Length: 113
Image (cartoon, rainbow, N blue to C red; front, top):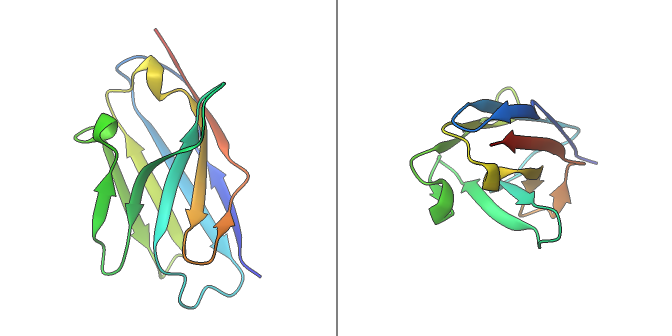
């Protein structure tokens, strides 16, 4: 069974940067498309970015040009580099192996104004 563990969240001032990481453990053959989601307080979980094979990416409009998703299948790692953060980026960020329907437990990102 595959497990996903996120790290890298924290508190940052608006305009700052954070880098999130998600490490997969277990049998990951054919893990397919991976993604980052986030859920702000009182709001539904939303897709932030996804990355397929061999590395095609998509982003929600609100993060285009600021966030970069990456994957290293050899290291079984998914990354999310976040720059020029805004208070509206605050939320719990989740890593997901979309094809397999597997989720991590999330990591909190708080952007102060």
